[in-house]
Image (cartoon, rainbow, N blue to C red; front, side, top):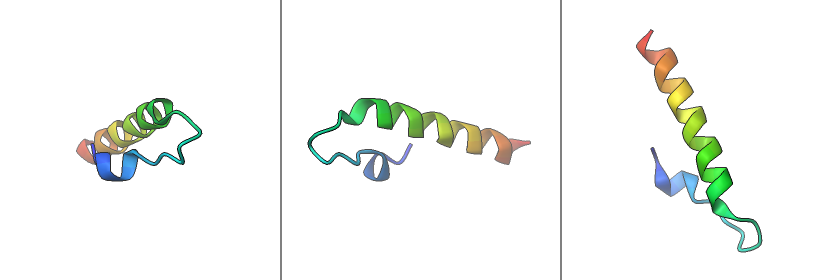
Amino acid sequence: VRTGMVTVSDGKSKPVPMRLHLSMEVLKLQREDLE
């Protein structure tokens, strides 16, 4: 997971939910690439 792109925090919103969401997106993309 590219944590550099994932940790996009403006200081107000919590970065954790965003990080989790993007992680799921990355896993989905990787899974499609494997097929």
